[in-house]
Length: 420
Image 1 (cartoon, rainbow, N blue to C red):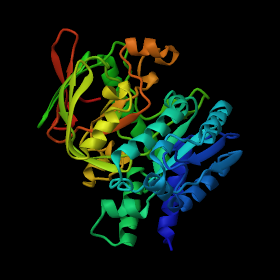
Image 2: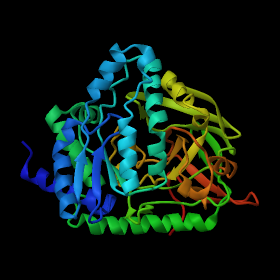
Image 3: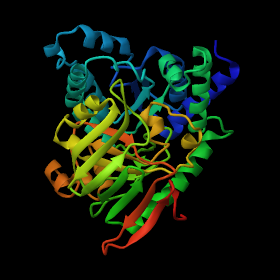
């Protein structure tokens, strides 16, 4: 049974989700789900209940929850005919599109088992993943274009907790991981909403500094990394707080420590070595590097999960290029925790990162109004996938490159090299 303190923190976390992440408005409906597992996992029920209470207190008209079971994914991949893995329940898409058209809010709760599919056939996993991405593309694009207010948060699952804290008992591992989540989302502070406003203000100052510079490229150097990444004209540095088309300002990820924009899909050259493992589609990819020529991935290598990595970049043509570049200092609270979370929502906020695949239209001036062809000609990338991998560490230096070729420090030893 959860302690009184845990329940109090869970309630504060739920309030942060509703009031800060979603900024839910009176009269909105809220749908809580997880597209990958086809619904929220059972271990998240206590959080879902607190979010529902907070949402109704904020004036929600209706809170709808779609429940899922990740073990069913494993059973399917183990037992179903290979040629059936492209089958997909269209109601997931039509239901989501109905919500989007109404201008209602989306909440995704993650916390899956990082190793769920790690011992299964990578070809089968890739086929299943591709079917989901292709069918859910229209929903993903609408959310990435901020059609409504949406947010991604985490709930602690037993397998995830044991992965992060393998030396602890199952009960103690879950309790410790919850403490880390409460800390990372500032839910443990006396006034979490006020703390988030101050945090967002500081992030926006960093983004404004980079926006004013309008560098033509970023140059990364670190052990195993020498990468020049072009930035298209009109790129926009974004951070905590995004305006949705339905008129609501929201924060899409809790926690968040990043400022980010899009790279030029045709101007990325060199090699970058990942600094943290990547948990992707139920498998771990470890000790890997990626080499680019003229924006395109031409080589990948990994000590573990190399086949999974290759399947990722074979998803479609856009998966062979980058769609996001994000800057995060090594002094971020998540980095300072010293834990690898095996979950991108947290690990990406401990490290500078890049994303393979889809670029967000709102990171390019006028991008939302462009056709896909216009967006790509302007430097953006289109793909059915978007996967972040971590490249920053205390040994990472980043320079901003001006149009005339001169350089200016942006990060030194993983920390900001400028005041904002």
